[in-house]
Length: 452
Image 1 (cartoon, rainbow, N blue to C red):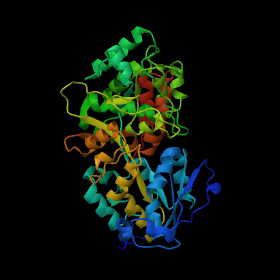
Image 2: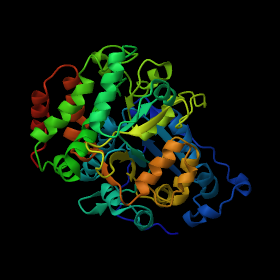
Image 3: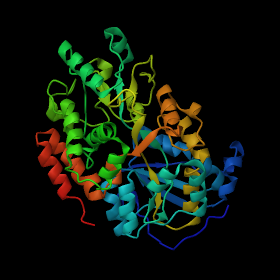
């Protein structure tokens, strides 16, 4: 396979120490002499690139970073491309600065279409090759392709995906206490009030802390309420500024979420009072469920990884296991299935055949199945076999993504301009949770929306 070249954009790649970021660096071992021990047939189409190196950076850390590196191990062996991955919690805040300074990685795994648009608008991105685009046309829906497109230019294929709006719980606690999975938002509120009235613990545990991105878990709450209360059309108007951020419908979503997030009776089980929401790391916020200190935690499908932070399997994710999850219910029991979700997009900052070979592999069904088999994640790739998922929940999530009847909407803050979705909305959630009124919060966010 020959990788179609686009306009030349050469950007030097600096060493991790020069980035000025706290990085987790992972490099897969290259052992082409051992290729005889690997079935290279799935990788022949990408060619061979002896001595070529490709650097990748993103927000993926810890166990997920290890598994990401493992997912391209055979690809490296068979193609000869040495891939180095550097993960940073500051990636989203720093990548534009690095690109502007000529210090971007070859590939950046961008978790926000809004950020992708900002990088493309800066002239720093290389359009995707024909091979990458062909994979996207085969394995993803048109909606997913559009998330990697800016100003009619296709820049990146989707990578992993997540379904947001899952509510994690202990199946054994629900069985012991006779709790039912709620079928509507009203039933969810009634369950929360029931748990609070029993007095054993606060119903919910919540954490918004995420370094420079603190506040983003709160935006997921608002997005889920916007979609369920007002439907996909209003949701689309909201994320594109067809309605202002301080529209009464947005205020209704905030106030609905506030019945939980701003209530001392509802949060923050096993952690502290309401103020601890903004200081508790999102990675650890749900863990009090395991100790019976809270009953409910709102977080995406990818949170499965965090129930076993040391990489073991002591806590099982299953309907009869240590922990499981149900989707935030609709406003009405007969409403169609509507979910929010997210994903990542590997954008290129250097125009080179080895870079596009890596991106083509990452956009393939081969990569999707290889990565999902390693556990903890899903993809919206149609060539992915749901049976390769590492848990009952993730298999269910893949089936939801592949179901043409599902109404799927990408994470709203990720679609908004960076000044809003990755700045004022995040900060607004912190201010609102710690006491700012809904009206003041929405007016402040609205005033930050770019004029053009």
